Length: 173
Ligand SMILES: [Zn+2]
Image 1: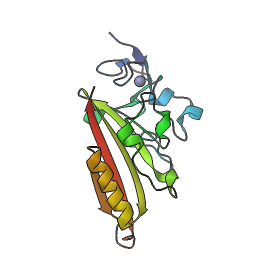
Image 2: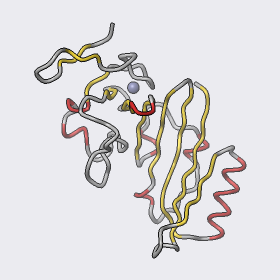
Image 3: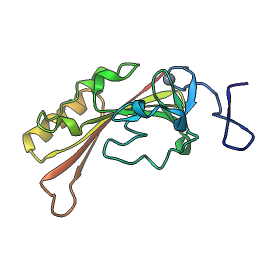
Image 4: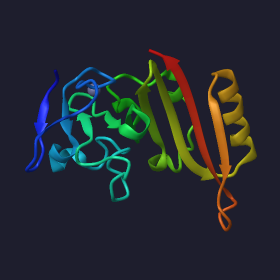
């Protein structure tokens, strides 16, 4: 049996199916019990969004790992962590994602994600950038050479000069 965590005014609640982090195997705590100074700005930007507010797919009861800060995303049964800094993941990102070309100018908007589940880890990088044919070509060349899935989505009306770039890479663990 794993750790049981008392819920407010009710019976003890079992935290997760496995009771250990699906990424590192570390001990779990409830999101609600994470100290305020650990939440912002980027312990896990998938849970505590950088630009205010929390991700509605998580709740106070969602388990998060006290060791690597991956959080359990119940709707898809996976463990997820997002960060702006690719060097801060406990398990290093794959070279394919770490070295993906990003525009130097809007570096702060770049978000990296690591997701564990079902015997695989999927890592991704995403950002908005100015449309630029030579940069787009460089991204496509890199994705092809490194076996990445690349998604290039044009901006909404009024922002057609923008492009939403996301690239992902999945490997078995
Ligand atoms: Zn962990």
